[in-house]
Amino acid sequence: MNGLAVDLTTLVSIIVVALALPPSEPELALLTWATPVYRERFGALIAHNRAHCERTRECAYVLDTADRAASLAPPRAAPWGKVLALHALLAERGHADRARFEWVAVVDADCAVARPLAALVAAARGAGAELVATRFDGGEHFYVSSACVLVRNTTWARALVLEWWAAGAVAH
Image (cartoon, rainbow, N blue to C red; front, side, top):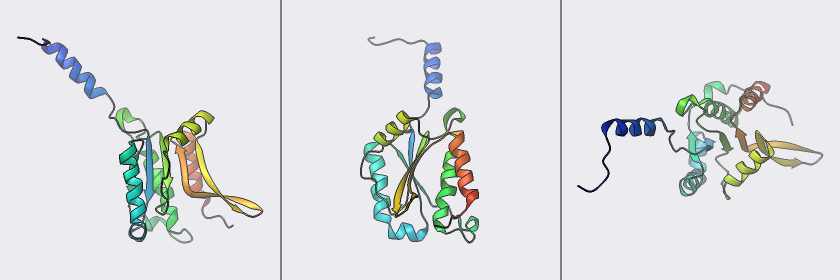
């Protein structure tokens, strides 16, 4: 008989080690929280972002469709649902009770990923950043836009998300 002979003890050890290895889930999640109306209006962009993650395998696409209306009493509008979705995803635990994702990119349903996200994560990691946000110019001031946000899953970032929720709407 040609081949490799392995005793049962060795085979069991190999199986135990293989079961102890973490699953091969990416370190980055691309998160979109969308109401039924947003899913209908922006379904093509949601599909584009899901396909981007599947094609590049650089991220796992998470479409959060939880009904968060009860938590969004006035004056909070529907976009505040993404703060709750981000908080929930940062809290998820994966293999060996570690955070499921080290990084979460929050992208609104009306946004499309046009370039690989790995370069952004690498730049943020290299700079020691825990939060990267887009901004838009408001004339004399600039405002942070929550349409596209990259968050590293750290204690500080999780606390910031809770503070963001507690702060509520800010008048512009």
